[in-house]
Image (cartoon, rainbow, N blue to C red; front, side, top):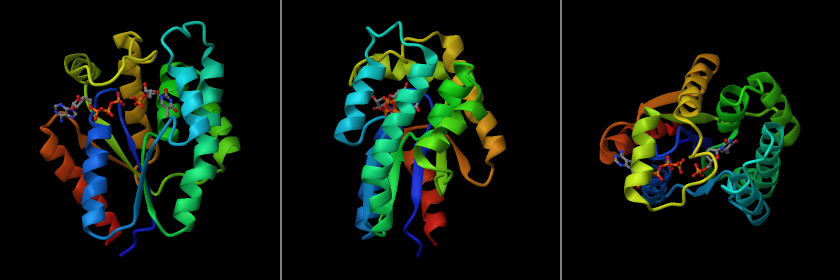
Length: 209
Ligand SMILES: Nc1ncnc2c1ncn2[C@@H]1O[C@H](COP(=O)(O)OP(=O)(O)OP(=O)(O)O)[C@@H](O)[C@H]1O
Ligand SMILES: Cc1cn([C@H]2C[C@H](O)[C@@H](COP(=O)(O)O)O2)c(=O)[nH]c1=O
């Protein structure tokens, strides 16, 4: 078994990443796999502070380049303080969002350019990409409706972007699948939660064999 993997979960708002990651972490633990579940932006104190600046709905004046750099800064701190040491200790790391969020949201949807955003992220964390990425694909209307219906998390500065922006995020992700076909695996997130968990588990189980 190869369990020393860095696996990232990606997708639009309300796609189910946070819910599924918790269930997958429990399942991995049941299989006696040493796993660290974490998230971006955040996961450690400094990055959580940066998160609260980026996502504050009052920060409407934030320039798109500032936004891209803050995400990259939070990523750098989180990666070197928490992710890399866990991987070096032989653990599996599963992370709710990572570099592909920056490529899809800032690079593609904001229009900064995917290659430009990739290059600031290479400065932040180096060139190594995750071993595997699972993309939760979902129409943005469905994900946003889930967030508004359940009300179990605060609505942030990115949530309130236009539907056109969220559609571009989805397009950006789907272009990343074409760019990294070996790494990024698409899961249909518009199914009941148990089905989504099973689809994700199958991908991870295959990867660790
Ligand atoms: N497959 C599903 N079907 C119906 N509701 C779901 C499904 N997956 C998640 N939900 C619900 O949708 C809401 C958002 O889920 P969750 O927080 O897991 O999404 P997320 O992808 O992490 O979102 P975000 O990136 O915006 O934080 C939660 O209330 C959750 O219970
Ligand atoms: C890492 C990262 C995230 N984002 C966006 C995506 C979401 O709108 C928020 C994070 O909120 P969540 O509830 O934790 O999913 O930030 C981004 O635009 N760029 C990034 O690199």
